[in-house]
Image (cartoon, rainbow, N blue to C red; front, side):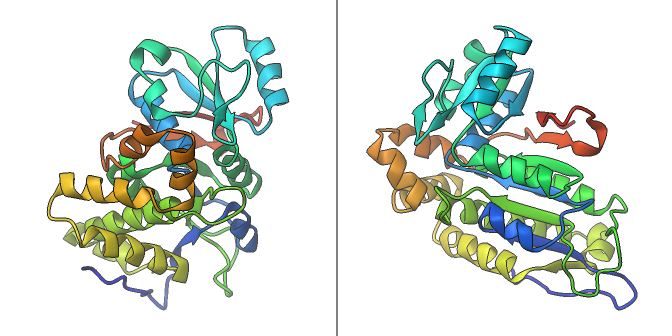
Length: 296
């Protein structure tokens, strides 16, 4: 089991990696010029990643049904409306929020517009807080997200001002939660991503950047949560089974079980299934629309 090293060089400002266990926690520090990684494992980010992995043109987000319908009228019927309220597909929408719906047959070469109870609200928070880039993460793209985080940290990212109080976060893993409450599946995913980031930081070529990274207390807690669960598994198949079983006992998973979405828990527990990283560089958009495409 790897222990996180809270180290930094005296002559360099630390690159802080933060976990916001709810979107509103991101109101307490600066995301400006940073990377926001939005996590809604059950189920928005799992579904969006799956959709792009099987060939969807892009994934756009909005927070209200009214906005979604207005955008549909503007862009036309090619745009698929996707999402849920309280776990149930929104009346009049083409698809719900189950990753099993996002097959190549349903979404290949189609633009998608998601509006969900929790996940798309987290995207809006990341945008409003001034993140330079937003990515979508879940367990199914854990490895690829961690490697892109390292790439971002190596890209000469700098804080907007001197950061004496360590209030600036270079990377924020933003958990969507469920109905305003912390959910274990999102914190677990954050910990899994941090854990793999720790693995790649141990490579000799990454020692310089490793010494600049400072992991927040919340990041340490999330990582230990993941390590506790992962240490009980003997192989990848056993790990996925253990995660799925764990999902039965967390807030978001229990809610889906009540709605008979048992298979969604299994789909969301498939660690590293895809190398797809949905990304939106906010510095490059002019219309304020958050639209995710697969990052090369």
